[in-house]
Amino acid sequence: MAEEDKKLEAQLERLYNGNDTSYLIFSIHSQRYALKSSLIQEIIYDSKIHFIPFTPDYIEGVLNCRGIPYTVINVLKMEKQEDSEIKEKVFLLFNRSDDHFCIHISNIEVFYEPEQDDIFKDKVKYKLKYIPFFDADIIEKNICKDLGKHE
Image (cartoon, rainbow, N blue to C red; front, side, top):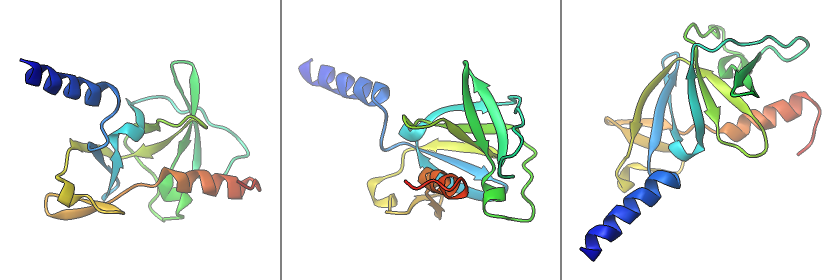
């Protein structure tokens, strides 16, 4: 009985304290990315974006999530890709203590728990393909650079 209690306790701890072995596979257009589930605050569908003037074009505006404004970033525009409009209204909010921003994405593919052998430094293996990790810190660095702020 004590062994079953320990297993249940470990499962509950993993559930409530964030699971570092679970990943979200999502896409922006046809490009897939992976992100640790513990880095995600929330996924929002069909939310209204409020435009902000005099900002870089990759900042689409802000959305309201329970009274907290999240800056909406279009990664394709940040990378200056030609086909940068995203038709779907899916937003991935990051779980960060220092700022509130989200990225505009096309689709949530799956939440996935890979085997340890399928996790690499910069990618994860999913269905015989390698999916690169999405680096949210790049967004913060680009915004600071565009605003002339140093870290």
